[in-house]
Image (tube, rainbow, N blue to C red; front, side):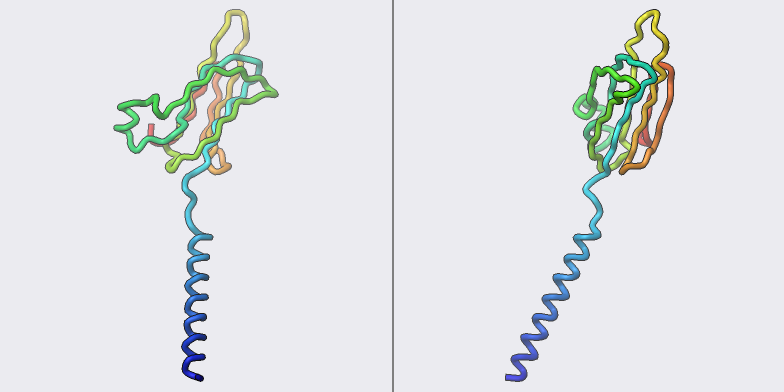
Length: 140
């Protein structure tokens, strides 16, 4: 009976150790991707046309073959108290790109637009331009 108790105890101890290892591996696993946030602000109320990468292509050849499968276009109104924000998840944030074009109207001052791309909560790039800023990371 003593040998059976030792074997059962050893089996329980081994099972507990393997569960602990699996739990630790899961807790320390890398995330599926990076949270990418595009933001546009403006010093005055203005209308803008935006293009930004919403989903990541497999590679540059896939993007070149059909860029509109990955890009989004938006026509937005932005004001000092109403920024535009879009969030997505990209496996490689170096694909992030965000272009802004103001729809300029005669007789109006420059909106002094500001774009930025944040990755996992940290600003990765930003740009100011009177009308049409562009923000991009490395793969462009």
